[in-house]
Image (cartoon, rainbow, N blue to C red; front, top):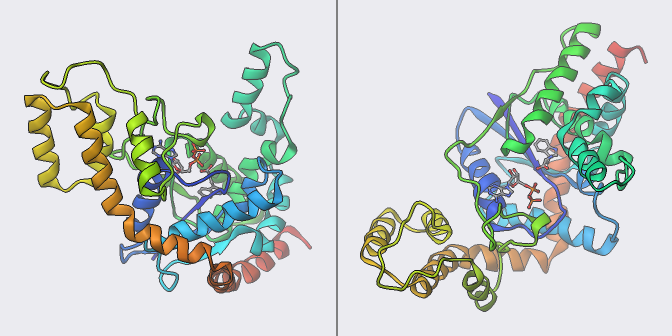
Amino acid sequence: MKTILTGIKPTGEIHLGNYIGAIKPALELAKIDDYSPVYFVADYHGLTKMTDAEEFRHLSYGVAATWLALGLDPNKVIFYRQSDIPEIFELNWILSCLSSKGLMNRAHAYKAIVDENRSVGRESDYGVNMGLFNYPILMAADILMFKTDVVPVGKDQIQHIEIARDLAESFNHLYGKTFVLPEYNIQEETAVLPGLDGRKMSKSYGNTIPLFEEPAKLQKLINKIKTDSLPPESPKDTENSILFMLYKEFATDAEIEEMKERYAKGIGWGEVKQELFQVINRFIERPREKYKELMASPATIDRILKEGAEKARAISTPFLQEIKDKVGF
Ligand code: ADP
Ligand code: TRP
């Protein structure tokens, strides 16, 4: 059995891009018999950005409820809150003492902020907290603690998995073989979903369509998606159409073929938006109800996550002991 592990941080409402790019592929991988899946709410990672306690709590429940509403089975997947597993933070410290500061200086997320600060003439570390700086080490601890073989993530996370591998190798070299070297799994065929303005759909750009939006609001947001000014009767190109890209993710094969023909013949954007709304709404109708039920019952979510944490700690507690013995505690 191979361990497959991934986490999502609670820093905003889950949107269609998160679903297509991260949750849907992870749920599909969880069905493969050779994999033993470990999925978690990366709340300590979220804390690097969140300062409003109520909002943070709400978003953490939201990430958990989203996975469950979309069909994650807690009997098959070890599913927990990162902050319920204190061993991860002990390992985080041990790994911190093996991480060179120079390596962290070169981590993309941090480097991007520094470059941006410099370009506008600000002090280079403006707005950077130590949690953000140390982020890749905590992520390595998440991964290495569960002897993870495969990490399904988006392209932006590749460097983090490489850092986890480097740290695992350093530790193994110093103290003997202990950690498994993780590999990443990128869903090449999964498109990066564009948002309302055509850029990557992202919380940071404020251009998202939240996954569990109510129907009226959902239709409104879809109507906002940018299109060109071709008249309805003009033939249209599916290749560069954001509407088509979204449609493809939720429609059946027959519907997709039909839509392609209608593009070729000429179809009005208003009509495409209407159809797009129908297929997305059809897909989310039931998960949205489930999501609402769960969000109205945080105690249910807590119970499921606590049970998951017990299973996770059955692995992390003895493994941390082994690690500490090797290090010389
Ligand atoms: P955001 O950019 O909204 O802050 P995150 O960085 O928290 O999203 O991403 C969580 C997961 O969702 C990652 O695995 C990421 O690759 C995936 N993801 C985010 N936005 C998109 C998108 N527009 N298309 C496809 N996948 C995405
Ligand atoms: N850094 C990931 C993201 O921003 C979230 C995350 C935290 C994660 N720990 C992880 C992903 C461990 C995979 C494995 O999306």
